[in-house]
Amino acid sequence: MTLGARAIGPLLGVALLSAASGAARNDEPYRVLRAVGGFSASELEGLERGEPLAKVLDTDRREIAIVGGVRINAPFDPLFEGYRDVSRLRSSHIVQEAGAFGKTPTADDLRSLTFEDYDLQTIRDCRPGDCGVRLPDTAMQRMQREVDWNAADWRERASSLWRRLLADYVAAYEAHGHEALAQYRNKEVPLSVPQEFAVLFGESELFRSAAPECFRYLREFPHAPLDGAEDLFYWSKEDFGLRPVVSLTHQTLYAAASRASQSQPAAVIATQRFYATHYFDAALGLTFVFSDGPSGFYLVALDRARTRSLTSFTRGLVRGVVQRRSRDAMQKILLSTKSGLERPSRGRPSPRPGAAIFAWR
Image (cartoon, rainbow, N blue to C red; front, top):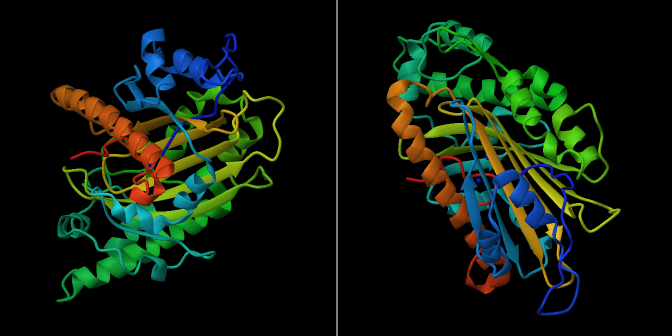
């Protein structure tokens, strides 16, 4: 799945010639992976052989970041087709449930979403500063005020209201972007989701120059129009082996109508996970498609997730495990995507880049 990679800027380097065909190779993915991920020349030889690469980036304790890439010997159009079909998410062993929102988000779009009894029990006892589930302040107040917790069917009532609240949250985000996102009070110290996204985009400045209009569109959505951008909002319930997580994600597909040079991406796929019941404070995935002549393309992906769940001293070892397993998950996702596109008769690629963080059990 949340996947991806980021906006990518031109870096120093010299274009190499492909020994196999004599045609100029697009060296931009190699330069990007060297600059962002610190991949060595020997590691990048694997990319030339078609092997998937992935590496953990050095970040502060609040963040998990993975960068990777792979060369795919196929056209990239089917990649977009896979992203448009949210039902394909359910073919992953991680994703338990998923669905897309309609043009106007409603609770009916979430009718098949089931909530864990643990989460419902937790919400019943939630108070500002002490809640095991992430909820905006107003949503927490409405759950306490509008649900009759003494009724025999309190679970059904709470679930119904929660679906309405999530649909309203998506509608507000569609209308106002990051400024409509919550300030969580589930812990003693409040957390601002817009500020978390500001950090994630700020760390992606290296990528701005490759696709500046697309980068601005994502950061300032919905206030910066972009012809050709295709947005999809979906919900998912994923089992990361710790506790199932209900998430809301904004996905953007963008294929450049024209490019000044081969070094600019032919397409960008972005995912913004702007709500999650657990673990994720905010997550940004950016995946870039770099054309490599008529024979194929390079996929360069960067996933970043902000979380307060792994910052304590006792969680230090757990964070290391999450980083390693997320790196391994990205490699598997890239390999699955490559195999699915190069040999479509053998199955469809799933999950997709943009979903590597925590994508393991």
